[in-house]
Length: 217
Image (cartoon, rainbow, N blue to C red; front, side, top):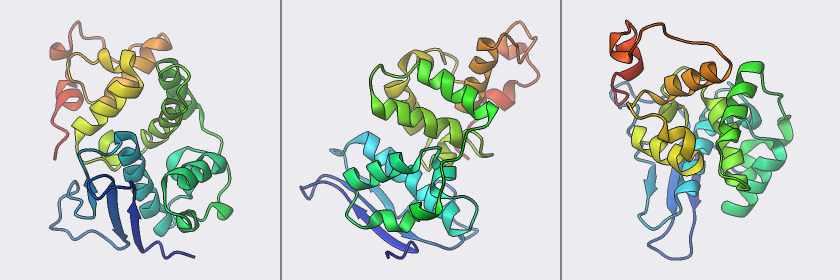
């Protein structure tokens, strides 16, 4: 079995293509910023979706390492979906690090199910990748950090690119650059017939800084 404390992932057939990841378990040094990832590099020619999946799986490994979640609990995907991703896009044997035999397909809660349903309603028709990202984003949105951090991405712009690619009509509605997690929950409330804010405009709301403050810290 692979040791998940030291994992290296490579994609692609050419030296200039692919993502290379080294993962070491252990707590981050206090002086290291949360968005500094010396163990992850994306080459310009690689597939962006694969890069995002790699980021998400690394976050999953961190949670598996400390006993916080199983692979299915961390990603929102079923064992079969994870096995398919690992088999098709990663080197042979890497699936062992995710201990899929110890995981079960966890049913989403009500909140997650609503988020997933909204994302699926805006997903690219007939695209299995969009359906998978809907499940992943809905699950990771339940974590406490910014959504791009919960997905293991480098910054907010990568999350914006992901959402614009797989949920274009939903992403297009965020014209005021609201924080993505706040925006998703606001759209969910609107879809369910509720309102999160009674102010006539966002700038007139007492929660303006909460919704629109920088996410880069």
